[in-house]
Amino acid sequence: MISIQLGDFDAAAEYQALRDSGSGTGAIVTFTGLVRDNGDRPDVRALYLEHYPGMTEAVIEDVIQQAADRWDVREATVIHRIGRLELSDQIVFVGVASAHRSDSFSACQFIMDALKTSAPFWKKEIMSEGEHWVEQKATDRQQASQWHGRESELSLCKKNRP
Image 1: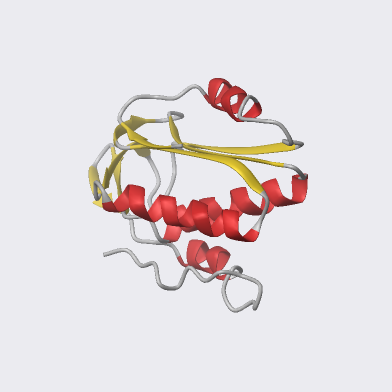
Image 2: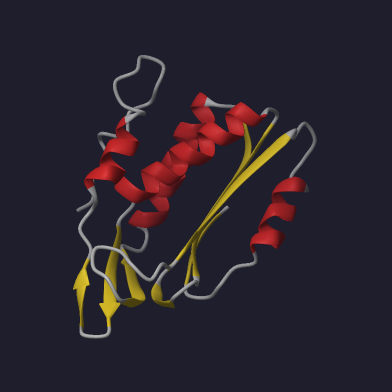
């Protein structure tokens, strides 16, 4: 399930949906990202997120398929919020159900790394004195690069932000 939305989400309900998704599930791993009060600059008061409708969902579908091709993914959920988000608001939920924990952990991290580097989202930090668009971080690219160059790994290199 993929949802790009303005409103908040219920992480517990999303976990339960993964748990109820079918037999054979032995592990569920979830990640929930929150708005922090610091980022590229100090004194972050809020974030504003935009995306490229249609393309965003297609990229996320492809990332989930890559994860499913690689690991035993029984079910995956990605929810990403857009619009203005205040401090401590939930931004993103990634959940993966599989038969075994290692598949769930790996697939969840792979999906989150791909969201940070491949999905067409743009983030603006709003501070008490101004705002600025956030550049993709080298640390995010480095984290995602762990999935590159391994024979058994599927490459995310073909996915770049416009």
